[in-house]
Length: 215
Image (cartoon, rainbow, N blue to C red; front, side):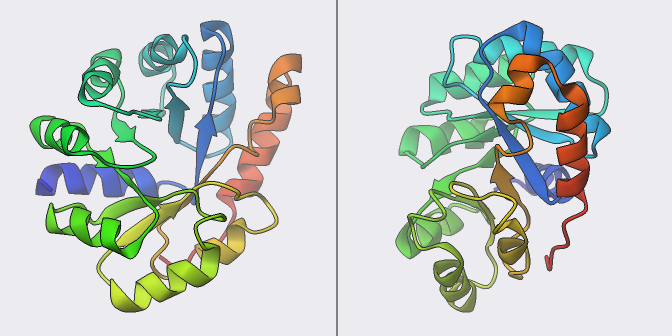
C-alpha cells in the first residue's frame, strides 16, 4: 500500500475509537446526522452503499459537514469504488476483498479498508501492502478470541472489527493491541434518526469517543 494512503487511513481511523456504520435512507437525514456525530467527537463516518441514497448522502456530508471524514462502506467492486471517490469519500470500506477491488485501491489516492474473516485472507492482503484491515463479521467470525490469536501470529496488522459490536463489548475489543478502532451502528439508532433526535446521537457519540483503547 502507498505510504501516503497508509498514513491518511491511519489518521482517519485513529481520530476516534469508534467508526459509525451508517445506512441512511435519505439525504435529508445525512447532514444533521453527520453533524451530530461529529459534535460528539466521531469524525470517521462510514456511509454504506446499501441504499439508493448512499452516494448522494456521501456527497452531501463531504460538501456540508465540517470536520467529517466521510467514507463509503459495502463497496463491492471497482465501479462502486470510483463512484464513491467521485462523490467525495475519503476512505473506502468493503466486507471482503476481490482482485478488482484491490486493483481499484492501488489505482486510487483514496485509501482502502478491506474486510477479512480468516488468517489466510489477512496474510494475502498484507502481501499486497494492506496493514489496516476490517475484521468482519467480527462476532460470528470468532470475536475477541480469534483476534487475539491473529495478533500473536500477525503482529504487524491492525484491525477494525465490525459486526455484532455494541456498547457492551466495544471496550473489550478496543483493549486488544491489534485493534485500532471498532465499527458499529449503536451510536445512530434507527428510532433516533426517525425522530430527528440529534441530541441523543451526540450523547451516544460522546460516550463512544470516551472509550479507551490499547492501540
